[in-house]
Every structure is written in structure tokens, then in C-alpha cells.
Amino acid sequence: MNNLFPKLFSNSKEILTSNNFYWQILAIFLCVLSAIIIYKAIRSAFVTKQKSKKISDFLQGYYSFCVLPAIIIVTLSIATATFALYGWEVYVFNSVIQIIILLLILKTLRFIFFNFIIANIVSLFLILAIIFNMIGILDPIIQTLDSFAMNIGSFRLSAYTLIHAFVV
Image (cartoon, rainbow, N blue to C red; front, side):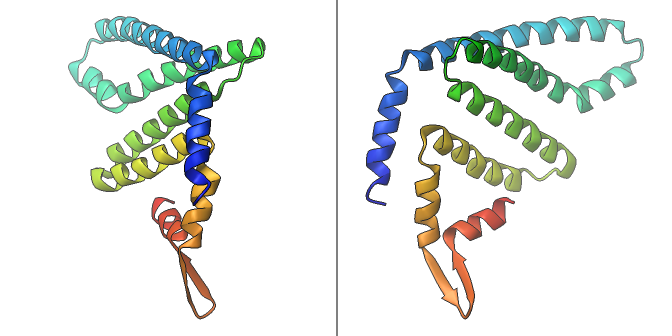
């Protein structure tokens, strides 16, 4: 726990002072903007061709929430490959793609189970895990949470296993 905060500050300082970080943020913004433009073009072309209101409502209700995140993931993957081709680090791209995939999965879970509370709690833990992994402090946090444990006979119960069991 003593070396967690200095590592957090040093890794955050290293990331935030890197030019690569700001280029990735700009590229992510452009990818999301281009994905929204592509989505609007596809949606306007698709909706105008629908003759039945029931079919249009069905497709918009069940499939439209997947299309925009899928287009964003494709544009971000292309940008990630382009950045990696030139030898730049792509840590922000990877984290953003992981978060978008996570949110897409959680949106699907909300849509299927109609349970928002569990999905929101799970998303909070998983998004924090992705952010901590990007900064490079996920392993020390896991070790710290695992150190808060209690033994019941041969069974060991830690804060990390409780969170892991709840999320998974």
C-alpha cells in the first residue's frame, strides 16, 4: 500500500506528459466523430428503405444499440493498427476499445435481463479495473485487496475474492 500512491502519481505523470497520449486522444475523438457520421448515414439510408413501421421499430429497438459501438470499435481498431504501424504506443486506444466493448456487453445485459442495478455495479468495478490497468497500478491494488483477508478454517476470504466473485 505504501508504494501504490507514488507509483500512481509517477505513472500518471508519465502518461500525461507524453505527446503520444494527446495524439491518441485526438485520434480517438476523430474516430468517434467519423463513426457517428457513418452511423447517421447508414441509419438514414436504412430507415428510409423500411416500408413497415413494425419492422423498423423492431430493428431500431433490438439492433440499433449495437451498431454505433461496433462502428466505433472498427474505426478505433483501424487507428490502433495505424499507430502501431508507426511504432507508437497504443495504450489509450486499447483501454478505450476495452471500455466500449465492456459497455456494449453491459448494455446487452441490461437489455436482456432488465436489471440496471447489477449491471451498473459490475460496470463500475470493471471500468475501474480497466483504468487502473491502463495506469499500471492494477496489480498493486489486487495485492492490497488480497491482503485484507480472513481465514475460516482452511478457507481464505479476502476483499479481492469477494469483489471478483460479485463481478464474475
